[in-house]
Length: 260
Image (cartoon, rainbow, N blue to C red):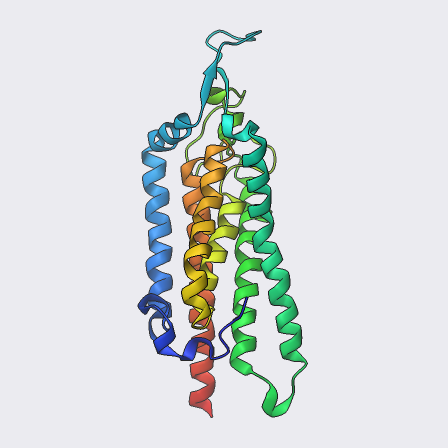
């Protein structure tokens, strides 16, 4: 993947929401949208339940251990072809991240007039947003301490744990919990890279990247691995982090220019 060496100072290469002049506004809008959606999913938990139920196949319990027990499976989760597709998609963001690290190392090997400052900044923003969002905030914090059981872990979909709504930390999941989806966050990060790919590569790659970025969290919902809210909020969280780093970078760059 090629990162735009002209960085965030080329207004003609960025959608309006992520142009340098509006990066701060984009962050505020996305940040507020994230919390609004969390509030909606919290007060309307039936949305999560209805979507999960679309992919759940109820079956007769062989040996019920309690009255009213619900048994069943998420068929897509048992399909070997779907699982292979999910495994391939799971690896894509991290393969891309390795490629970006290699590109940054090559960039740092240049000196003087050949050093591409804006290219290096683009790469650092891309890698920084991956580290801060999907890795630290999502996987190491929220998924560790949120306590929300995955759909297939809850008693409504063949599991043993109680359902809790999005944003609640009252669930009994011990680790690697459902809120929010780490794979969806990584997929959202992939989507963010569209905005720093130069033309004409952007035109060719934007649609495939966007399709993969949406399909990854969709598979997690279909597999019973996450509720819709986990997938949507996980995906959107990366856009929030990415826009925040873009805005921070632009603010720092502007201050340095004014001081000089």
